[in-house]
Structure formats: structure tokens, C-alpha cells
Image 1 (cartoon, rainbow, N blue to C red):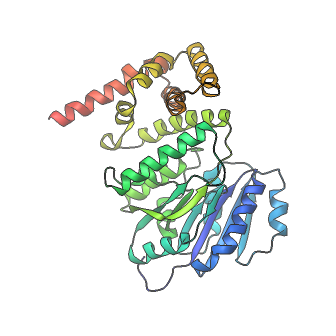
Image 2: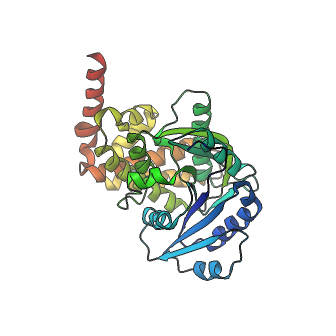
Image 3: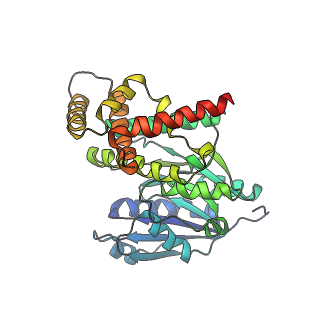
Length: 335
């Protein structure tokens, strides 16, 4: 998509029971929408029962605001419903718990004017006005480290970092790829991006296209998300060619102590409950503790438990999948 004019933009926002945060996003868009020129905002309400639909019905926005309400089917289905109704040349995906910053639309539009068949990934920054709980602070720090490595060229910007809290792509490319896979309730954006890449779409990180991400995930919700991410990553890996699979590499990058603890826990429910309970107690203890290390260990245990469940291997995960794949990669590299 290369043109002297701005492409029309459809902002796609799925939402479930986040009325206040969604309303804040829509108010923020009132300050920034003129950057986009020809813009529409499509909110897909995914089974909300907190008054979201009523709030949307009462809003009078200075930009075209379209609302699609459906029974709870997950974010992939919600985004697909919004895409089916979209009219823009470009889809800009935003989560309902972000706050757009100055220049967001300008950066995305400038990129797409100069780049055909490409997707852009903007930055998600931690909020400045209030601290996050330890598990979300750890998550934000991990993301910033990933951004820094991409900017320095230490890791490639590819489909694996296509996070739809702040990302844009031509609508025609998404439709041609078949949209989001509604079987995925986590990692649905990464799964779509893998299919976009197979069609020849390239990916670029835009560090100056910023949203402040203000998550409200509880500790229990964070653990559940780690488990679901592991489960869906394994499902995704099963659809990829061997050369594209990354779980063994991801495992080898983990801290040795984290790997030891995870191996000891995964496939053993009593051990997992014991370790998760102890690490959680240590995280909220008044004495100073390395909370980022604790968060990393907790995430690892729950993530790989999700992988083990999706594979059906439980404690045999290491012998029958991870170690075997790692050995296959090593032999391939030697040949």
C-alpha cells in the first residue's frame, strides 16, 4: 500500500466487561482521530454484561463509531466480526485497555504509505501515572527488553511479535489470510501473523507509535494467561514447519534454576501447587526479594504446564518433545 494520500483506517477494538477502560479509550481517540483523516472505530462487544452496550449507545463521538454486539465467543471471533464490517484500507488493532499517545496514527499511516504488503507493530509502554503490581511490572519490563533488542537488531522483527494491542495491517491481507482462527483464545494475533508471513507480508517495529498499556489482570488471571499462552503456543507450533518452531530455543533461553524448578513441577499437580503457593507468598512478603526472578519462575511453571497439557505428555514433555526437538535441531545444524 504505497500512496501519497492517507489510506482510510478502521480501528478494531474487541471488548469484554471493561466498560470504564473502553470509554477512556474512546475519549482518548477523540483527541487523536484527526491525525488519521478518514477513520472509523469499530467496537466488537464480546458478551459484556456490565453496561458496555448501553454506554456505547449513549456516546456521541466526533468520528464514525460502529458497535457490534455478540455472545461471548472470544477476542478472535470479536475481531473477525469487526473486520467483516470494516470499510477502511488499513486495520489498526487496539486493545480496550490502552491509551493512545500523540503521533500514533501519524506513525502507522506514514509507514503504510511507504510500504506495501507490510504490517506494523507499535510500542506498548507501561503507564506513567501509577505503579503496576509485581507480576505486571515484570511483564512490562520483559516487553521493553524485547523492544530494545529489536531496535538494536539483536532479534528480528517478525510475525512472532505481532501484538494486536497496537498493530496495523492492510485489511485485504487479513481477509486473504482468512482472518483470526477462532479456536485460539490466546496467541490468536501471533497465529494470524504466521499466516500473513507465509503470504509474504513483512513486519516492522515502530518505536514511536506508542500506546500506554494499563492492564487490570489479577495475579490469578496472570497465572491463567501464562497457562493458556503455553497451551496455545504448542497448538501453533504443531501447525508450523520444523524450521519455524521455537519452543526448544525458548526453553534453552530460560534461567537454569527456572528450568530445574519447571522440570520438577510440570506434570505433578501437588508439586506445582506447592511451588506456586510458596512463590506467591514470597512475592508479597515484606522482606526485600527478587520479585522479577520470582515472576519469571512462576510464569515458566504455568506456561510449560500449559504446553504439557496441550501435548498430552505431562511429565514426559521433556523427554518426548522438548529434548527430542532440541536434539533434532542440533543434528540439523551439524549436517
